[in-house]
Length: 227
Image (cartoon, rainbow, N blue to C red; front, side):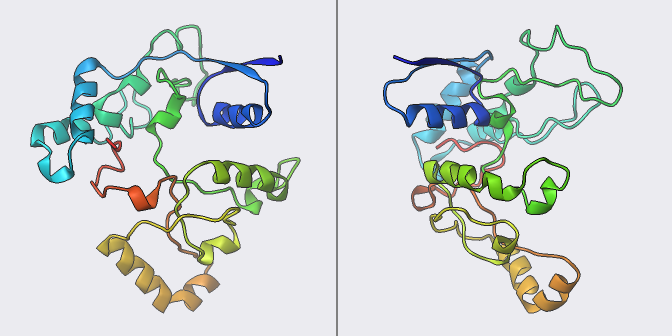
């Protein structure tokens, strides 16, 4: 039986695992380091996930919905403090052996399972062809890999002007409903589309890794969905 050891559990590791497990007979071991949510925060998370938003306690929401904080080392802000935890940014031994030069952010490696992807939102967009001008390959060579990933995850999107430069690569689920502000922005874009396109500006709806039909609109997308 063929076997493999995958180091890490972030997006790149997930892609490797998808490829390996598509072939029968592989024995795969995932090795990752990191810390997890503290027990009190996990209890709050489980309590929120078990109830509709109208029944949530204000104290529980306040604990979960912490926003970005100033960096403790003077660097980039610590964004997406998932469920009110800073475990992504702690040094659990992964940073101690590393040194960086001037201008390099010292937070090189996350202390969370899944790495810094634990602090990312659900936005999923491919890179445009122009991003590969200095690379030895182009977006076309990545197309089948984008398609494979998007077929393997829930993917809510719609065909709009963005698809001209950022192809969908796979059939999406219906998009989530727009907020009033987002609707107003897209309507102004529609009215001024010709002028804006001539000036190089293209707008479109977000593409999100989410099961849109089963989404509970709780408003906590940017701080961590309890569902």
